[in-house]
Length: 459
Image 1 (spheres, rainbow, N blue to C red):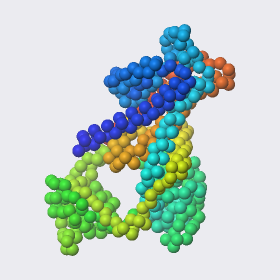
Image 2 (cartoon, rainbow, N blue to C red):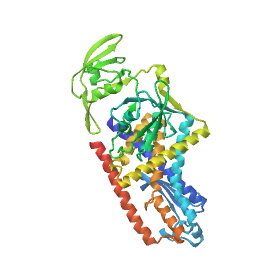
Image 3 (cartoon, rainbow, N blue to C red):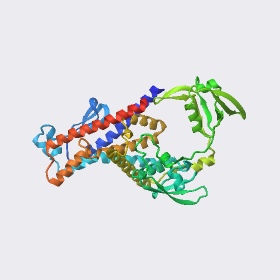
């Protein structure tokens, strides 16, 4: 099973990176063609070519290479080889600085456009979510001091409407990065609207990799207390050995009343190899069993595992109360997609800024292993989640590539801005120094990201 999961994650990662790299490089390619620059090669991936084809009037070489971690567009350029006199006007280095700037910025812009397109399609088809009802409040906490109450419905944060928990989490995170006082509007159980202020100035949720922002604020998601029901018993597992059957409704485990699936799962995971008295209801009768979870390794930790598939039967009335579908017409969906892309871009930029000044932990950096893991999970959940994953990664690529770091598109844009100001190009010697500095920075960041990935596996 583990091997299948790794294989699925690898395939999803290759598909995701392939799509996003192609979109990014197509931006450079398309605008270069519009500007009259000759494109020699369009490559998705690095290293040994697996597939090549020449096409078009310029006989551009299209390449699919072995290492799926990037790509490039090679253009005619005097700095990279001799150019025939009749083609000089089509060389990249001979173009006006405005054209060169447009060609370079097109890659990141296409990443943002892809995110907008992906979110638009999702909102047009309808995004399923859960209404942001607040669960148990921690005392003391920021939420407790502000007067937040259990079963409050979050209506807006700093004037931004929060229809779902996904939107509420994103908005709370974006607005809390700078340690601001959050103005949160909620609707209580009595249907009265209240305006609350949450002081997040002392929060440090970016300092630790696994810190939950909502936990630091002092509340979580409200979940109906409905005991889990066994949907399927896997042959040969601890559940089958204990006598559990499909259709059993869990009453108690190890003397504790089971009124929600989280408690059920937590108790099983925490008690590998321990005999746990179990009470279930089967066909209207109360049945007593003895359940012994078996040990299983999960991300470097030993957990209990029994081999069942659980299901929670939520009454239809409650389901309708909790469920929300964000669905818009084409125009409104596009506006919502633009707004979400902007929100994610700003949040990414703020977190990067915090990393630079030391207010965020480098443990938050993720490399290809973690990205592959989430690619696999999102692909397994469904097309909607995979599109959402692609949109987030596309935004991250767009923002990162616009940073003024040599080797990245943003570094070239920085050089072109200097050229516009001083009236002449940056010297080749200065560019060479910048390339070395940029390469060193990127290698350092990649090393930290991969190191974090490995730690997440072994811890």
